[in-house]
Length: 338
Image 1 (cartoon, helix red, strand yellow):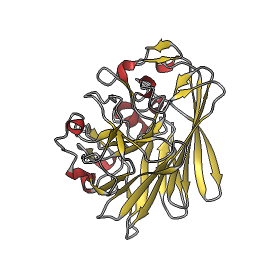
Image 2 (cartoon, one colour):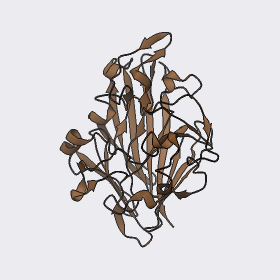
Image 3 (cartoon, one colour):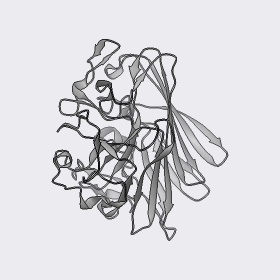
């Protein structure tokens, strides 16, 4: 296990390890050209092995987010061997998901970018999922200051697949002031309400007139303690938004902006949803880089994905992958300043 660093012509750096594909550092400039590391995380692989219950910076799979009660029906048969590791539900691929395995690496490069291809075979039955699944994730750092993530997978048996990236961001710097002063915009007129365990009820609800409405940029910390039960039951924002675009089309999902530093991050994806998680379960028990103690809500995630519990919700975009099919998905985190 080792760390790798990608650097573009503008001095941006992305550091990651082949353990879990974990991105540990992202150095980007502010409006004055001063660089800061905007990713929460640890210094060593050993710390990620021992203390990464928060999934800092990791590739998540086979299934990002939750599957209700760790079971679903596939082609008339019940798949019920998934780990129950989040209350009564299955979360982020189980006890040893993609975040806890060693990926093979191969350097890639092209016009205007440098990168690394990570590959992993998830064996039939691993964490209860059917099929031998061959997955690859390519990280690219472009000279346009973009972190590009390209996912691809095939299987030899029908299965479900929903990968994502679990980076936590603070555009003021991972050890800077709270991101609760950041502005957030999410291009979504609808979201998927959940029960107390974070499992979607099946409803696709309008954001109109609610504290879930981020169609216009606003400071998200002002409503994170909303009395709306759909928010308070999860301790703040930890929801899936239904993006205003066609699935498969690379479109703008969200924009985060730190007015103090001027750093901006735009998120583009081919996925149909994005989970905005505001770090509600960070609790001061994790000490990261430079001795920074990560307190509640010290970082936020924008996890591009299919919807939680899609295998149990037939009207949600399907996550089934079959032999002969190739899963492909792309997400771009584009950094800039204002």
